[in-house]
Amino acid sequence: MKASITWPLIIVAFLALSVGANVALIYFASTDPSFAVEENYYEKAIHWDETAALRAASERLGWDVKLTSSPARLQIRLSDRSDEPVEGAWVEVKAFPNIRATQAVTGELRETRAGTYELEGSFLPAGIWEVRLKAERGDEVFVQTLRTEIFAPRGARKDPSTSDRT
Image 1: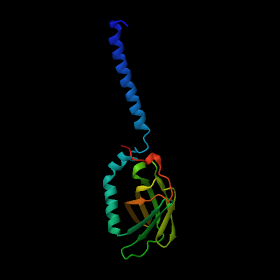
Image 2 (image 1 turned 135 degrees about the vertical axis):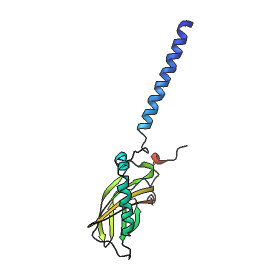
Image 3 (image 1 turned 90 degrees about the vertical axis):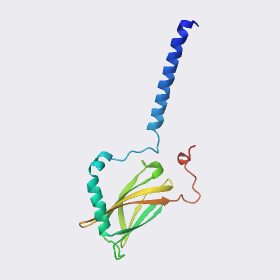
Image 4 (image 1 turned 45 degrees about the vertical axis):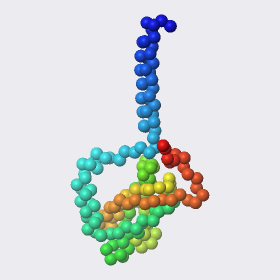
């Protein structure tokens, strides 16, 4: 090969390598199942004062939440200041695992007993889940964000997509 063509080919090879590396990085970044963006984050930022006021009103309301979770069900017990069950509320949740925030489970909980509300669904992978709760009864609105650990069912195999990466 002539010396006059070798240097231009080396430069083209380095440019092609750079383009190939960037394409690979874009592919891996856009297909990573653990990457998530908060929905409507800009709107939420604009309305932050209203959200803070709603949280403060929830604290003044004095409702308490007890959360029980399993891979198949979320159970929430709502009680008021005097530890009486909060009955007849409309309750909804958005729950997602910290490791896979795009795998959210949302739904309206049904009241199974006085003040106890349940949602059935698939709450896997096992691990720490964030649960965003909203309960309404008449003019009363209660919001709270909780964290719970959901354990894998006995005998379940570990999901290879959630394995530790080093």
